[in-house]
Length: 185
Image 1 (cartoon, rainbow, N blue to C red):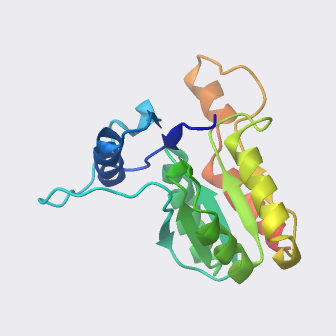
Image 2 (spheres, rainbow, N blue to C red):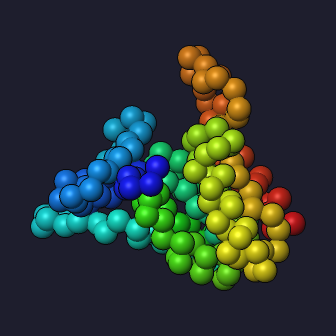
């Protein structure tokens, strides 16, 4: 929605810094938090800090593929990246964290470097933020892509209440790994 700033932290440090920025901002801010992250722990600096909206975080630099994610799916992607590194696949991992404004420059520069992009989100694939990112990359970095942008999403079904079925519906490290390999083949 135009005029609404939107952020989605993936860890306690980002949640703290983005929330401080949101509180101090005179504009309306949508702060998306995943309840699945409530048990995630992390270090916080003792001094107060903020995180600027519109700045993605390069979690890890790599050369083979760019993976973009935010919020809870970062935990899944970190697991996938560890598995991919064992197979000598170098991943550039970007935590988008600020959905609007979007740090297009960081995303496009990364895709220009790796020539491959995989987007991982918890939402359904149609009319989603990941869908929007796919369009941004396909429009602004088309000449650099060696393969189509891969979008890993929840399967397009109603979310089940059974834990095993929920796990089968959501993105997984295995699905991310397969998408990366498909992208690189």
